[in-house]
Image (cartoon, rainbow, N blue to C red; front, side, top):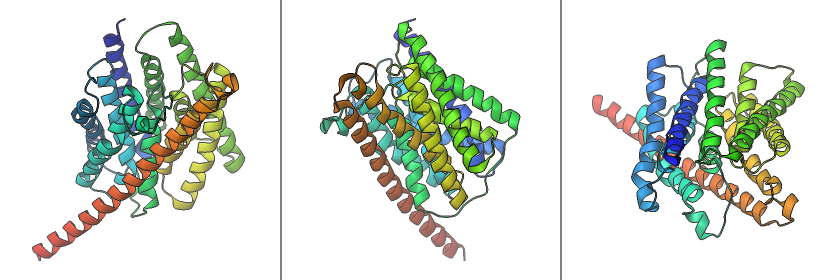
Length: 353
């Protein structure tokens, strides 16, 4: 299969990830009619897709190629995740979409350009993190966006619920799409494909083990939500380095990411009653751990193989820069948009009177 065929398959896999996330994440979204919720989720995702299609050719003149459409689809996943906390924090549709557009233009597109086209601010700083599946642009950046919005506080809307059957279907679709994307990110079907899929499976299993063990120790309970969060954390942990992990190191990354994400998430949800902390735990925390561990465990590249600290320093600095930048941008955007919406609403009320 040619690279363009793999690219089309990758886009399909990413779209499956997006739809499945929208199902699994229902418990973090405000209560709304099903059709409305789906339309808003797809609209939020479209802000990332359109932002990449518009700005990428400017930042990366030679962007047209097999990577172009899959990275645009990844922008949909990133902007969807980045806007969950905005939607649950009382941001109306207009505010949420504007947040998605601005965040995608300012954060996702430059980060993705650096990841996939070796172009951007990190390159200017001579930082060269390894990121096979776009974990920095999608997981770390969107998780940091949710962190910034959640730290600003605001109203807490009642969230929706889903049946166990629907949730299970969503989890199966999510895992299938994620594994296909990890393999497709090579843009070739070769000897590495089987190893990538194996690392994805054991990483996901490790995430479940880490999450469930931590939750069992702290709360003595196991739920479908726990299973989903563990699977996501494990998959996120191996996204940056699926071709470079061994099955053992992939499992270790999954266990560590799942355990850390669980401890962080449950402590924050317990104290704030905001389910949106799952985005921060399962994406930012797990993504950061997986990306940094790659600098230690990457086959023939990591510190344990070469004794060199260059890669692990690049992984740490790249993660800190992306997370910090996304969080700051998100705080500023949310405060400005929320204040503007309040002023506009007050002006309309006075006019109506």
